[in-house]
Length: 223
Image 1 (cartoon, one colour):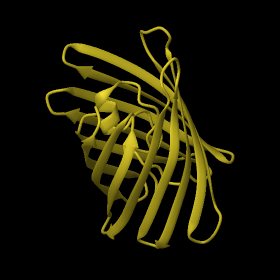
Image 2: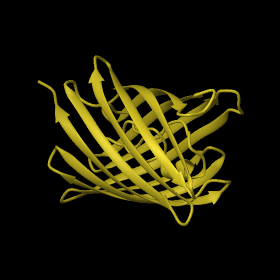
Image 3: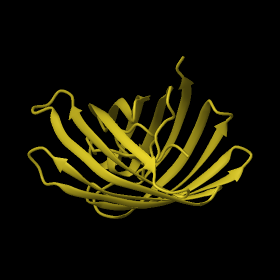
């Protein structure tokens, strides 16, 4: 059950609604799991908020020893203005029992064509409980440590259900960049190599924007 991750918001309102620089997918709540040894993952997603902005993300991550390391970049167009940013990520996770895993993530981020470029770092504690093979619950407790700005809490809770025939579904409730959101998403997985994601994030409170997102990921095995 890969994929529920978001990092530091770089680009404002749409990033808060769609998820920002990430190594595990466009969802805001991460799981306490990392890639297997010898695996890498390529991913991209496109998010749109009605009449406001369009965001394109691309990234890659690989398992290196006990951690998963990632690099990502994204560009946003809002009205006639364009912005871009990039970030790194490091994530560790491990099982503490048959059904419970714990982890942590560390994600610094930068924005292009501004001074200072360094925007800050997002840190989070991760927990996953898997009471059944087809059901997982994820909890994140984190904080955005903003460079020359006000730090902000980043928390979330998600439920992930594997329905069969390659389909799984996710429900999320989370706080990000000072806004409260709910998200519902679906994923179609083709064998062990690729997956296609769709989701809708709905702003409940705060300055962020609701958004539609479609994403694609490809899993690679290193020799």
